[in-house]
Amino acid sequence: MKADILFKQARVIDGSGQADYQADVAVCGDRIIRIAPAIREKADRVIECRGLALAPGFIDVHTHDDLAVIKRPAYTEKTSQGVTSLIVGNCGISAACAVLQEEVPDPLNLLGEREEFVFPTLASYRARIDALAPSVNVASLIGHTTLRNSCVASLAEPADADSTKAMCRLLREALEQGALGLSTGLSYGNAVNASTEEICALAALLPAYQGIYTTHMRTEYDGIIEAMHEAFRVGREAQVPVQISHHKCAGAANWGRTTETLRLIEKYQQQQDISCDVYPYRAGSSNLDLKQVTTDYDILISWSAPHPEMAGKTLLEIAARWDTDVHQAAARLLPAGAIYFQMHEEDVRRVLSHPCSMIGSDGLPCDPNPHPRLWGTFPRVLGHYSREEKLFPLTTAVHKMTGMSAARFGLRQRGLIKEGYFADLVLFDAERVNEAGSFQQPKQLAIGINRVFVNGVLTWQQQQMTGQRAGRFLSKR
Ligand code: ZN
Ligand code: CU
Image (cartoon, rainbow, N blue to C red; front, side, top):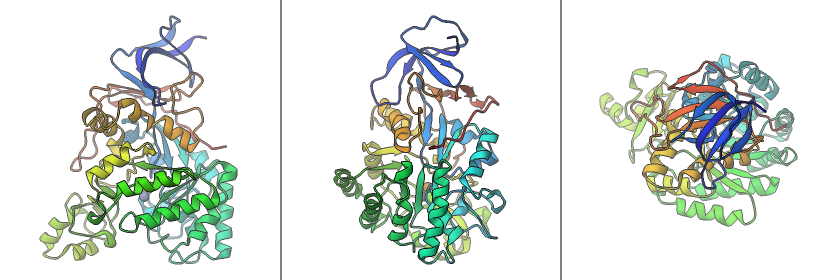
């Protein structure tokens, strides 16, 4: 069979975590059709890859890009990093299945504006993605807070039996329509009063659909061990795999405790299926939460509705300018977004290098001054942590963003360079690849990402979008 694209003499990092090798790779239509030491057949386009690494397109397993990718289907912030698939709907908030009144409840407001929430079912969201063909593939979890918002009388209370039944109905329908699983965001005000039983009732629906349970746990601060026990209990009772979202030990009092949390994961892995995702930075970011305000570490304001001029300044600077303390300054900035330097570098490294972790950006696409993870997560893992800091080999870094991720979330025939698999591919310069942004200048194109192909279509080259897009909705069914 004649190939559309032939990659010549690529250093293939196939996503399995196994050793790299030199080969030619042929693509026809949306598939990889042949991998061999030397392919002599003709192809419409021949790409000389000498000196470059060819990997499966990166999978961002933790995103809040549900609506951003619809608003900006040429999704530069992720495509420029070599990302070819996104998992949306994390942390309890999915745009799919959201039915809103006037206000957008916190933290659903991380996803977009009121008028963008027009997807009462997963089927309607899926149809929109397929019609748009964004520059990346999209798969979706269903958010518990989204379901609560549609079904409970008060978000401040646990769901009663009738509301739980209604949430289960919505979730089952979404699973039928191809959702990957259920996510929770239990530390947020609009879910913190949900009972564990409420979560268990929903999670019990997942096994029939091979769904996964992902959780932004009840707390990542002092009570993290109890929060992990709750997550594991849901996994055991419902018999579903558990993914701890953006695993971290937050707050100065908890620095160093990932030795404890990772040990706990290892212990429970003997009896159940547990993994986590992680972003490669010691700062987190979300809506500004008065409960998280402290002077123990820097807090950078990423946006503020009443004081947009304060974006990019630290809370301490703002408090000094207003001649007040950080707590009062924070209260005056609300609603607002913040970047918290709440982790210890050693903890970040320990989680990144643990065999149970995969890479997810948790980037916030609506922030005017976003955490740099939105533009830099994947090249930073490859360049900073693997090449420069030698935290793990490049093959491991790639595995944590491709093969491992696809297997975990059930993205069929993706995440590996393998004959018959989809041609989601990234060609990059392993000697140069890195993030270019910083907390001050976060919106920067990654360095060293040479070309990106999505379903066999060249989407990114020479540091720009090609204008062609071929992203699809990736369904579990
Ligand atoms: Zn989260
Ligand atoms: Cu998140």
